Length: 254
Image (cartoon, rainbow, N blue to C red):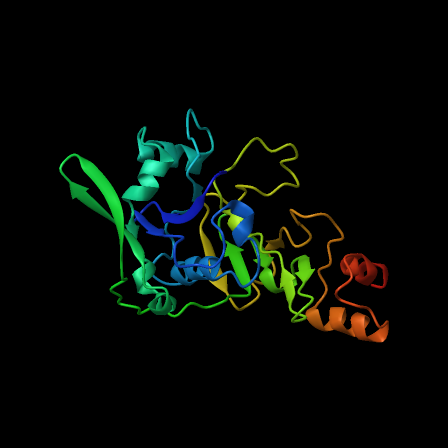
């Protein structure tokens, strides 16, 4: 089945459950710009979760004899509890988001004698948080940032013409899924446990950009603006339905 991920706040023992969102709950299924679940996490990081220990936690993650400070902190906080059990024990805050008015179901355990099963109940609000899509995510611990609007293009929707970009933020914040073969260039868990903040303003000098050219999918890694992409498509009469449309665009970039 693969590993499932949830946004978890270790300080508040809160979780953004995956049920209301249209994306899948595996690592790369939320790694695209416009993912409502990722934007919900960033909105919380701009508000009630600001400064907290927040991570994209996998239910298969293990923390044992850790030397990385934040992974060691996670190990101590879990105190031998499996990540899957910890995730399930956290308070689901999806009822905070106005988005969940249209997706009013959440798991609720029902205990009957020695049995336990789940039923679905509506979210009861307060629906007081409007989800925002922020352009930048700034890492104050490492003095790094991601410009989410200029990351690699994943694909162009052949029906709508929408340009869908890769969003590295979930991978940067995840509990590492395995040993990295190239730690200098791979990004899984690079920001795990760091203090991050969303912003619509460029962080300025003193911050290094990361992961702009990174893509889990095969190259080319096209990071120019949507306007430049559509200019090339129009100028050269390209068909966005072609399977190799990204390669065609890449070949015509200056």
